[in-house]
Picture 1 (cartoon, rainbow, N blue to C red):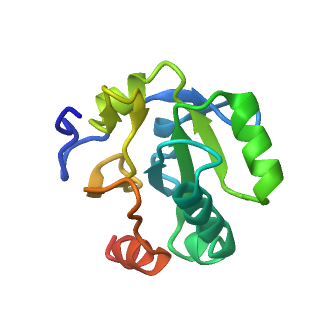
Picture 2 (cartoon, helix red, strand yellow):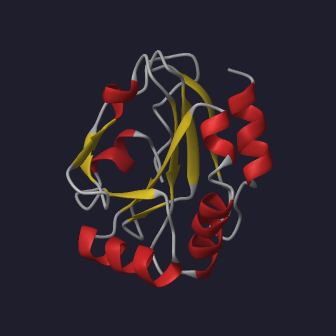
Length: 154
C-alpha cells in the first residue's frame, strides 16, 4: 500500500464517482453545506465491511446532527454495491471506485490485492481534511461514537 498523500489540514482531493443513489457523487458539491465522512472499505459482502456499513445505517440519525454526509467507497461495481445494499439494508450511499483512482489518490489502495484498505477521512464544509485514520488491519473498524466525536470537533 502506498502512503496517503492526503494531509490533515490540506484541501481534500476532489473526485466524482458513481453512486448507488443514482447519478454521480462529487465531493466538492458539499462545500459550504455539509461535512463529509469518506469511509473506504475493502469489498462488499465481507463480514467486517457488512458490520461497519450496517453500523453506519443503524447510527445514521446521529450523523445529520453532526451536519455530515456519510459515504462508503469501495472498488466494487455499482451493480454489486446496489445488490449489497439491498441484501443488507444499508442506508448510506455507496460509491464505486472501480478504476481505483480515488483509492490511489487517497493512499488507501492495497496494490497487491487491488482493493482498498479500510480508511476514514473527515472533510469539513470548506473542503479541508480535518481527520483521517487508515486501519492497520483489514478486520478492524472505527466505531460510530469515535467518528461522531471527531465530527463534533468541527
